[in-house]
Length: 292
Image 1 (spheres, rainbow, N blue to C red):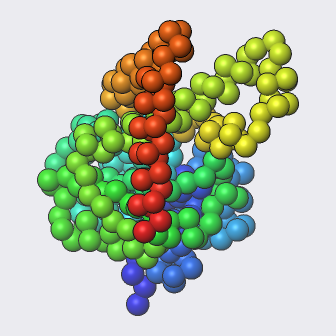
Image 2 (cartoon, rainbow, N blue to C red; image 1 turned 180 degrees about the vertical axis):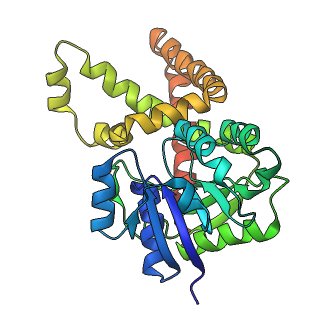
């Protein structure tokens, strides 16, 4: 017997598509129905087997859905949820997301769903590439990657267990955080790095002699700026939805950057080496632990 009946997928790109492909590869789902703003994305998603068919009427499709997943840019989620919520009649249908920020999504979901908020189980897979769209999806994306749930007090254990099961089938390792802690952590280790990478490339691209900079950029530039190739709309929404925490992280970073600038201005070798050494040691320790 299949673990899941019908899954309705809003967004058929890298994350949503990989989730669907992983469940299909494990023969764990009966049917996946997709919705997207882009008819071409739906066409491609069906051609490569991410979805079984494209949805036409959301009200009809969610009536018998086991799981509804929002795999769109985060600021689209409330709009979609508001549109489909009046048709959410089945108390056993579970709604979930894959957003990289959580607190604002949860707050907006509470306003829309009110007494049914227990059916919404927020989630964030810590996986991805710099590529986007259905063609970027592959079933092994979540293998041995972390999946963070940010459970709500209203969530039934059986709903949490169902979402955990889906992600375990995809190969993910499950962790739990509250939404506020999640956003604080990922502002530092994900959202800020993306902003810095985008900022550097945008700065160089806007210079009159930008072609010379890019001509001589090598592996260090490539490694640091890989994530600047990520989907701009998706990261715009992530950063805006976590803007207050991210502003605080930028302020923390500016202190260190100012200290480095002061060390350069005063030729303070000791301070500069101390900052570099601390960073190098912490990075090497992190890399060593990741290999265990």
